[in-house]
Length: 76
Image 1 (cartoon, rainbow, N blue to C red):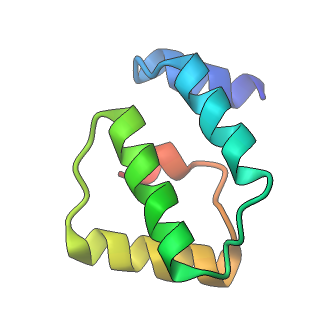
Image 2: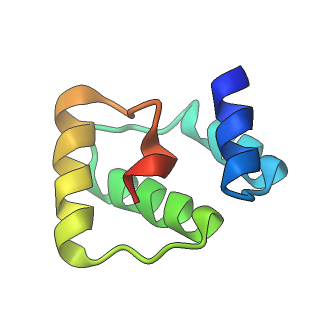
């Protein structure tokens, strides 16, 4: 958790937004591509980044195959 908070501070990301996102992930089916795309869009919004379709497709593939990476915010 320390790495997460350090990354949030380094990238000026709102901790409360991340905690809300984390809570919403507890009950989400990450085998459903629509859910994965929603998570990607939520993370991008929180991080203040835009994600083009190619990167979104790549992230969907990574998440489907390997699960949510611990450095998801750094992948944008």
